[in-house]
Length: 393
Image 1 (cartoon, rainbow, N blue to C red):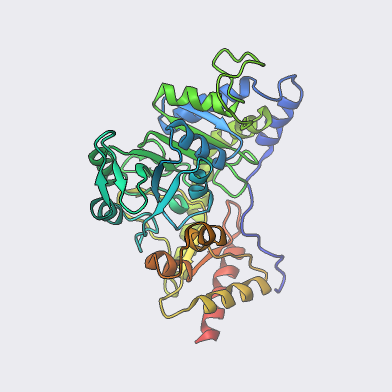
Image 2 (image 1 turned 45 degrees about the vertical axis):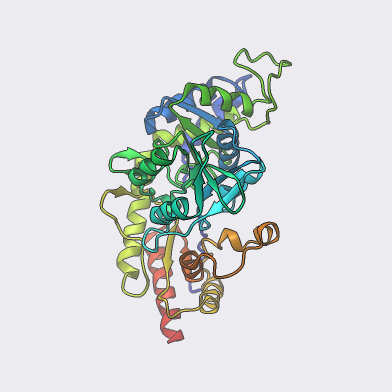
């Protein structure tokens, strides 16, 4: 590939500031449950505008605890999207609850609120004891909606919150891809009962592995803190366990890294926005690019384009293979959750049940995207994709 090395799909932006912050922690006796945990939680809560933040060891753990803290269990169902990383649906399975999928909006790739409304109106009946809808087919009580702010673009939260109010539903926001995103001036992750962010190395900011739950509800925050720490209560007596809990703690090293990253978050987001803008200008005439939408402040997590409808999944997969051969890392973001083998085995899902999700999923390409991509690398990626598409014509 000429003089280029392989261009990775993602890469964390770690500076001397982060390295020194981690080294400082290693010089202390506190490697877990120390002052950095409290500092990180307080600073993150302030950044997003929530009353409470509870740091955990992954976004997946955060989603699990959000579900558990709302007492969602075997008799319950949660409405969510089939177009996401699988953890957003798996978190219901951990508590033996039923994830119910509705299709997505073709422009935003987010859950389509109109489809949720239609589902609640046509496929549910009112349950008098709780005031919540009951899914007629399964008899499960529909207890919550779990929207995913896909690729750093907020869902249509005003309509979702109104729907939740009308049907007495909880909202758990999967903001794992959306640190820094907002909808009409309010941060993604802060609308519902709980929001969950993630800090895997490909995210906007990283703690290596890690996540954080945010909420304005003190009782939910208290529950999540207990659940993440083996079910200990607020007294933190080491061998006193008041409920079933988990080892979902975030350690001091991760928290120090998170604090340093959070202090650079505006710089980080601006870098990502610049890379995305360059891609958009170079690619908008050949593929559908993720453009700006009025009222939404996108926080760029990944850079995903979609091919025209004339392209098949086979065409897309051939393009992915050719890009990789030419040194451009890429992937198909995301395969539909309902067509994952696990979900087909458990629930009998088949091709054709969620047409928008399946159509878009068959034509998406995630291109290399991180803060420090050079102009030459961006141009090489764009030109390589352009050449491949021209050759296919």
